[in-house]
Image (cartoon, rainbow, N blue to C red):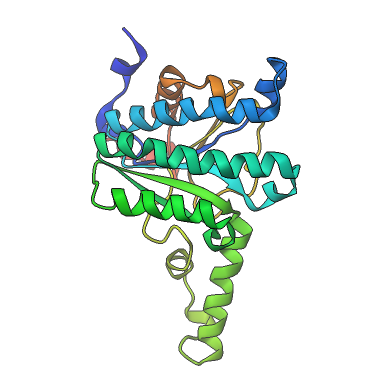
Length: 248
């Protein structure tokens, strides 16, 4: 029995988030520059996106570029921005063929104008697609997002539109970049690193975390299926005891 057929489709995670790590180290192992790894990682993006759509996952969020990534060498940053433009434009047909909607989270207005333009073109072209939503986290960090939410709520308190004691968890969620997206149930990180790297810190409070040694350019459908099967074999208690959980 192959891995895909072992997946319990009614128990799929509704939202999967991925920290796509290891492009540079994979390229180094091949004796190639880091940019070579980023270019090869595009195939993994395509394959995992299509696999999630085929299974019935409703949301897939990919951590494509963090606010901290600006500190990388200028050549690599420029190459990443160029690759992003090329990839979005090239993959619009694939997104349309698979009925996938493209959207983004992050401080998009601070990206290069060409990158913004390509991203907005892709989002506009796919806005009517309904099978799955692909979310690209670009120039994103969770601390940036939470800080913005706090500032917005503080302004409302300052204008007497809201009392500080009235602020709820739900209200904070409504002021995050992901306000229209359900929280991830499964977070995958590739390359063997076991940290969150400032990604969706509020949203993954009860997500299942899955770390794999596989570098992102080598991450394929079977690796995704393994992560989902691992997720389905876990007991999700949300603070309760095993005895309190009612299985359906």
